[in-house]
Length: 94
Ligand code: SF4
Ligand code: SF4
Image 1 (cartoon, helix red, strand yellow):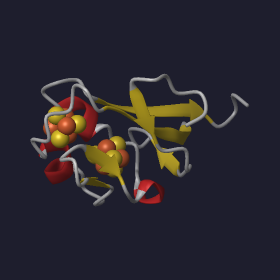
Image 2 (cartoon, protein in one colour):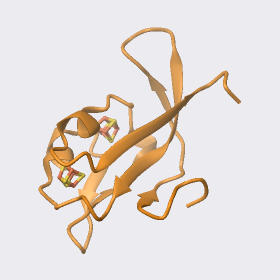
Image 3 (cartoon, protein in one colour):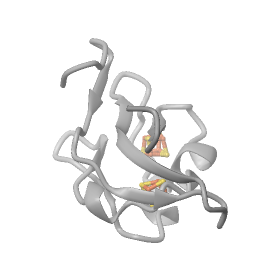
């Protein structure tokens, strides 16, 4: 959970993503999920094209297959409660 505040449970496993079909490669830092805000509606789970997300035993979104994430941000854009954020960094940044 390094680098992620108390409110968030994030996954730290990385993946490689290409944003918008451009050549700008992004590296996934993790999915920040605000467990206080997540109401377990499952919208993010259903919209994710790669099966990255599931609801956990507490009915909160969790990134169970982060390495499959393509950083499309559909989960972030569709969440009605702003409870999930896809955190990426430019590969050249570090
Ligand atoms: S869409 Fe948002 S509120 Fe619904 S399960 Fe996903 S993170 Fe939680
Ligand atoms: S960014 Fe796209 S691929 Fe990654 S978890 Fe969200 S919906 Fe799934």
